[in-house]
Length: 240
Length: 173
Image (cartoon, rainbow over all chains, first blue to last red):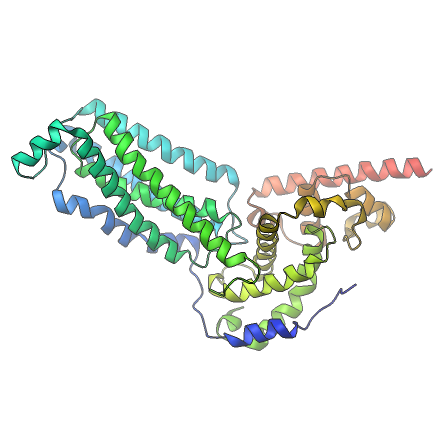
């Protein structure tokens, strides 16, 4: 029995000696999540900066316009924090917390959608665009849904790529779950800004287009997480 | 670990010398005595090297490396789909560690046979706590459960082990 093996094998030593450049230690999960706030805030605000807040924000009031978005953004960062914990071999959080966060995120999106719709059931796509375009969006609401779905998926995709780069050294046992978590964080963060800009609050639009975009970022994060996990831990895999 | 992150080969050798025997025994337990444990040990330290930047000095090194070994084992199991094959030989675990706390309860052979009656989760928690000296908080971080759940698993495992040993001793008598 090889009980004591204090000296590493030659092959391992050669691999280690090949790359001994100094590295910067990773921050704690909370610090890692907080470092992502500025970029997440910037990307989620792009649509808001481009077309401004929705025309019925006066009806919704500042609390219902900004409050749910702030809540979604905080939950998005919490999901990234959980993903960072999931990526640390000795810092995993209990599974019930993971499931609770995923359920809370879903419920929050549905609740905010229902609350916004019940307060201001806006279905007119009134944007700061030429009247002709607004008329076209009014007669063909699917264009608006398509635009919101694609637009927020693209914005969320940018955030997912950024999060994936930050988590490229992730040591998650369940890399797909970790990826899905930061994907959900990206989707929620984008939705937080998008819902303030989007002038349509009907349920099919908010849940169908915006919700689909969140699901798309979850899937994208899960796929990237899985890819990174497979690349890292396959025997004979390339060093990252 | 901080010296190692700074590029010291000697620091890596020190970490290896201190942790490799324990990690190997842990991997032997996870792989149920399979020879793959030696490959996984090297893979663990290779992964540690590739991901050394992911280590945060606020974490203790030992649970981090053991957690990494567990990750490597689980990912390998998933990739190779060898789990069923490994567990077919559960009765034949040749190097299964014996808990120091259980040593007085029976012979080493009896304890090994008694442990085989426990669930894998209970055995792993018992070994992590009693054999490798991890706190329940550290075990919770490695396994993704609460500290209370880790304590309950170890406690139930020890109770089941006592019961199994009593049964074995009654049969022998």
